[in-house]
Length: 184
Image 1 (cartoon, rainbow, N blue to C red):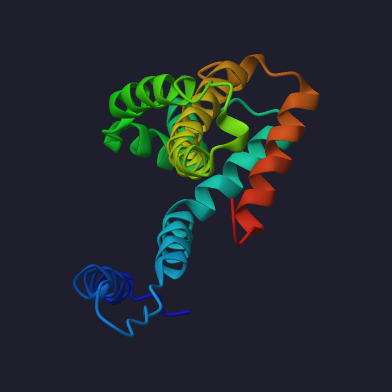
Image 2: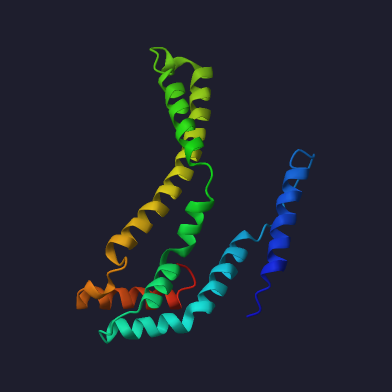
């Protein structure tokens, strides 16, 4: 398959700019923004770079051969490279913490006896809950990335030679599944 990542980036950028520039226009209709396609193409192209090396690592794991430091670096890039890059690039973590603290204080202010019968306060509460949900979603995605990196480092880390035969086989199967999966 021909993956033209540059062209897909241009389509995504144009779609976003169209959305931003015309959102308030009467009769606005959003256009398709092929972000999922771009994400898949970037992932698949990255996989292609390491495909043969990962196959070699799978063989080494299954045949109880020692992994080299280069194998370990490739394994880490393959399994958590995107997450490490995301955590480095993410700039909003402190802002999310501050927002969650403020939103929590705002939520606390709705603890009044008349809340259940106050139409305006109930609508405001629903709006606040939507905002909390959005911030929590971003925060949880970031926390998932951090936790997955920690799990990788504690499970595999730099100590692949200390994995049991069962763990090596499970890791080999996980890599094989990732290799043949359209999504990971």
